[in-house]
Amino acid sequence: MYSFAIFLYMCAVGIAAIFNKRARKLAVGHRRAFFQLKRQVLRDARYIWFHAASLGEFEQGRPLMERLRREHPEYKILLTFFSPSGYEVRKNWEGADVICYLPLDTPGAVRLFFHFVKPEMLFLIKYEFWQNYLKGCQRLGIPVYSVSSIFRPDQVFFRWYGRGYAKVLNKVTHFFVQNQQSADLLASLNIKDNVTIVGDTRFDRVLDIQSAARPLPLVEKFATGHTVFVAGSSWPPDEALFIPWFEQRPAGDRLIIAPHLIGEDHLRDIESRLQGRRVLRYSAANEDNVAEAEVLIIDCFGLLSSIYRYGQLAMVGGGFGVGIHNVPEAAVYGIPVLIGPNNQNFREARHLLDTGACFEVHDATDFAQTADRLLSDSEAYAHAAQAARSYIADNAGATDIIYKAVFSA
Image (cartoon, rainbow, N blue to C red; front, side):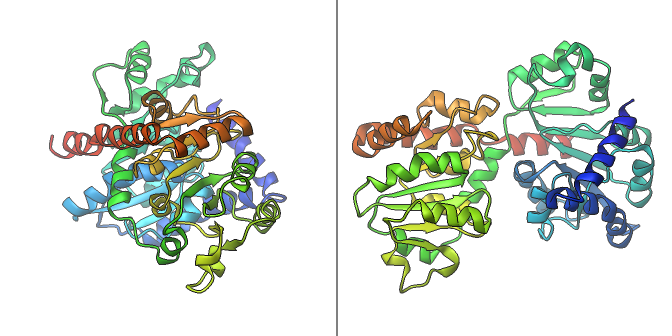
């Protein structure tokens, strides 16, 4: 039944690929994966396999991959993605030796995958437990580690109709979970002895990002001497809140917008909402014009994690639709963060809300009142900023625990 469902999914992706660019990349990428494996995998090399569903999971697994690369250069790293949003951004990452899509989880594809590469261990980042791949690992004696995994009661494993599929979790050698709830849910499936609560490796990653943040001279010139609001990974519903607010702010304030989707239509829509302000795209910025701009639109990828440090206040987008994006990425710089209400399934955001470092907003009025209060009340601002810094620092260290448990055993 499971393999038949995968087959149906494969057919659906194939049909969608005719009309949808993202689905087309997915379909082509899954097919090309075998050619990449055949061409790039070295037969006499020792591989450790990391699988990340998308870009967020990659960032969680990155500290572990980088430490493995530093301390065990005898291993090569195979990195697979399921989603185009992960693969297309990181397909040329120098930290892995082979990077490709994960071929769909059919019995035939799994057999062919293990024909080309026989990894010594597999790290699954956060989630995605592919039944046929895990059966293949069990058959070949390949240990499987689930890293930064988090479980919720509404997941299929814990529903009456998913108890059969939940047996796939028994094929995982060890779970390094984020919280107690995840450990308790696994215990309800009689998975207890191979579970360790370590927290989230994402905190290690954002600290690494902070320490390695590259200077951005044009952004620095734009921001120097001004109160700067940074909108990271924004969507139109987020922009409908902070753009009207910014238009009422003093002329000396500055706004940096890093949209989640960088398409010409979206960029033009943002520009059309800011008719009364001097707007500049980052791709058109230079030493002469950037200091005169009031709004800087980041129309490229890869800069956001370094841009947050130039802000005094930030909003992390997605909370009015798809779910919020990476809140710790902003909080690590000790700035208060505003988010939308769709944050229930994001543990770190919920904890930042509890500590007073993060603020949930529901509409334009709520947003304006919260942002204005933080920027006008120095005591409230200082409390939120310190809470952000402390939370990140206090929750770091998961990578070290996992690494020592696996490689020092």
